[in-house]
Length: 123
Image (cartoon, rainbow, N blue to C red; front, top):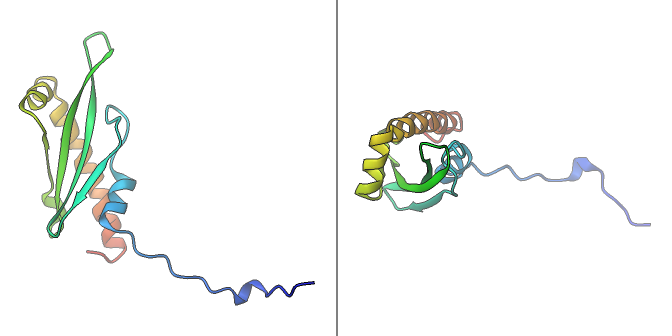
């Protein structure tokens, strides 16, 4: 019979603090038109998070995608911005009010990310 040490002898490693990208993956919206997977690029100054919005026609059928990216400066997360990756995407979004909808969604998402970072002592 093998000796099995009691659980109190187990050493547990502290969980590493999540990174900005970890928190973005967890809290950026998905669904309600944002139906693709998020992609992320990072450099020393900022994080770029890109996705697509699934648009519908007047009959409620999906008819295309609008590609967009969030630009999130690491020094001041509240100064994030987003843009559509083509003029056509931007024009369709403005025409249908999708740009205003996404601004509101991302403002909410980023407020959650910022709260989590402050709570974790990362800001």
